[in-house]
Image 1: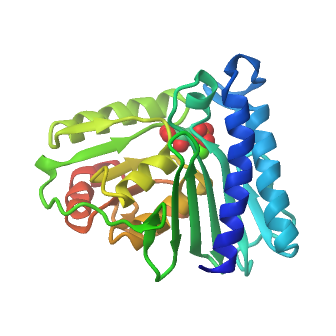
Image 2: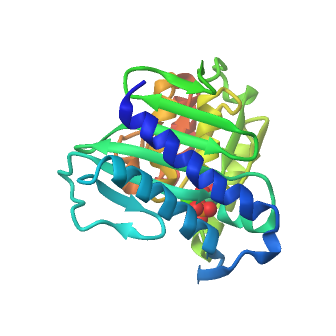
Length: 262
Ligand code: IPD
Ligand code: CA
């Protein structure tokens, strides 16, 4: 295993210890609303601190882009090593004790995601990927589904805060729901991407995401044989924040269906 992936796993497990302890009594979690329906808790912050400390102890010169603390001073487009961190993806679920959230950590090397860890502390599921070396769930190789027709698929989606995002989500939901078996909204984009990689979902789409929601999950999907792209099919999804992720045949059909929302 790549040593940097190993360090990321260690960081994710430390964060999970913080998260699991707090999950025993969600009524004690301190919640702040960043904007309408966009929350941060003291547990997000403590988990993020545990991750950053673990990564920087091993690699003091690496840059950081983390959901709660933002970008380190040495982060730029040319950064040789930058860690992209979401300490809890699915914060709203976590606050309510709804068991669908995860830790997401990715390593970006000169703009390319090369290592990925998503850890689901509820199910004790550890998803890992290294560029060119495949994707794994609890050390077993995972692959995207083989479905080739949208009609046979189970998809997932979600939406960020704000009325515009909701309105567009509703319109996309209508269009996709009419063409596949069902569309789920689980409240954790990173976990949705991990589920696409593991063949538990055929595809995922969402607009307005942040790099920390997508970075690790996108490498899992591509290393599991899937494709990630913007709604136009182009490849700058990490910066754009709009992503379609699916097995190759389903990806093409989803782009055709959703291109009008690009
Ligand atoms: C959110 C989740 C959710 C998605 C939102 C994200 P957070 O991240 O990934 O599934 O629909 O757009 O902001 O706030 O729980 O880290
Ligand atoms: Ca997130």
